[in-house]
Length: 406
Image (cartoon, rainbow, N blue to C red; front, top):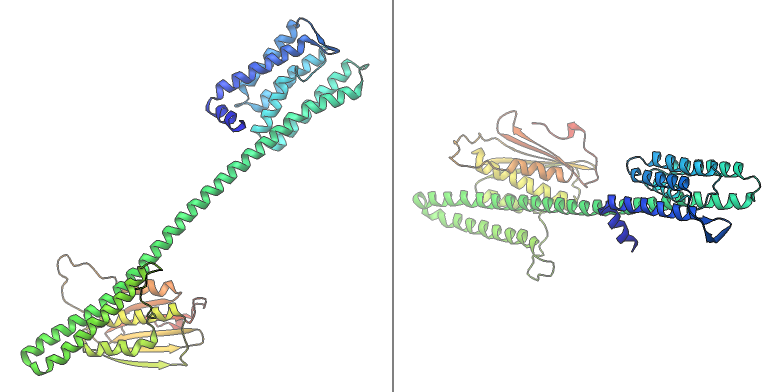
């Protein structure tokens, strides 16, 4: 019922204000017609009192724009009645009490308390000075109670309204935050899957293409050596299918029994990776400095994928048969450098060819685990990819000297 009245008051504010002013006027007229000492006897209302009640009621129509002025005016009207010798009753004070309630609802607590105390003291002093023979205790208790009660009730209503508004704002913020967090996680997962698929496909397809070209050449000039290359090509495509199934299997539902359970690749599989490049004609030398320490799973996968992508780029663009991978372990960091001595790919890009995302993906991978990556032409030719990764994601960034610069 209360909520329905509040909704109606919000939808039709002018009608509600008019009804409030009319009710205050009617109550004031009734209060002026009843004898205070004998409520059972009714007298004709004084014209003066009716005019004052009408003026105070009309002032209530301005409470939305001028709540302080409305309270001051209605209090002044009640003061005029008290100074004229009219004993103030709750009915005669209807407009003043309504304005005190609205003042508490529409302003802050300090303003509401100031208005209520000022009106109470003013009307109390005026009433006592006009009728010193009247029992003071009755005047004080009655007048003070009725004048302070609307302010307290209005403050409770305002506090409840602010609480509901704050609760709604928190609920909206929580909902918006949940949606933004969900979108962010979906975007991050899409980027991670895109990097995985790019690395797997680029690596194996590049090796398969190189081996296919080699097999074509050997079948024309050295057919006795072609079967060995074709077997390597079959091994490369089989390995590509296995890694694709493992990667795409991450998108399956949790309850799927066909989901692969193979562990994610890491530096432990580095010899197998280098062997696949060697079958494609790229010899890779590996050097290790420092005590080999285990990496966290995410960092281990990142190191493997970046080495894989860097060597794939060597196979595709460097025009060389030799590359080097250097690993340097410190207490909390591992530095990986992939170098080659080849010449850059000078072939003009084909029309409509889309630039690759290899270097972008490598940098994103490194940053996702708190690492750093730099890539560019080497000082003595070729191309260098320098990568610094923490043993764990919580490790601090290394000193700049620990990560090679291009």
